[in-house]
Image 1 (tube, rainbow, N blue to C red):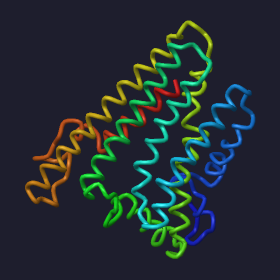
Image 2: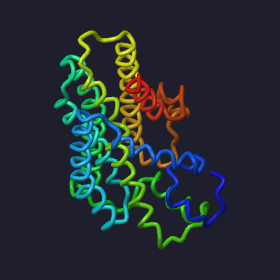
Image 3: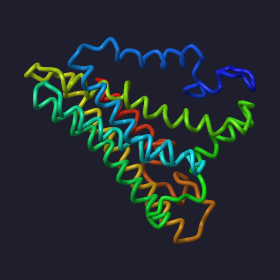
Image 4: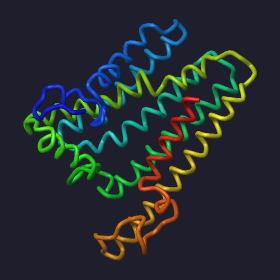
Length: 260
């Protein structure tokens, strides 16, 4: 974002490559809930309460107690499942409502269940982690070494980053579900079918990439090989040779489908 080291706005930055004005616009979007019509406000307010009920005990408190951000990988997709359940109470056309809720349920449910099983197996189902995931260790490195922020403030940044994902579930990522679940039109527009197909392709692509990644991790653990790189021979799993992060690409594609 071009901020100097130690600048106070690093604390509020939404993403590393966003300009400060872009980050502020993201925060301003949260006030859009206040402008929503009454039938949507009910869905938004209910969802906000549910997201707090998920994130406070299962993400924010564990992060504060352990200093590990990995818990958000369980809380965030669980929040998507909650969005699906809340959207079912919408007043729109039943077929559109059930289609969008089914998509959200599959999208969040696969990741939540996968995280619970994978992390459970790694910790003996105690969910007490010895260390954080590499991407969160890098986030701390970036905070202290690249952004030049005090290490003593890292606990606050962890809370801001993880709660930000709950906030995203509350006021941004739920929008496609609630708009569709409140639409009373009985005929589905061709664009809606295109959006559904786009989501399905992205979800299958991401799920397949994650399965290939899990297979790779199991193989390397059995072979006691800690230096192998997924996507490079002899570990050139199909999707991982096409794209450096096919799971992230599939996730982006799925949300493009939701937006359509």
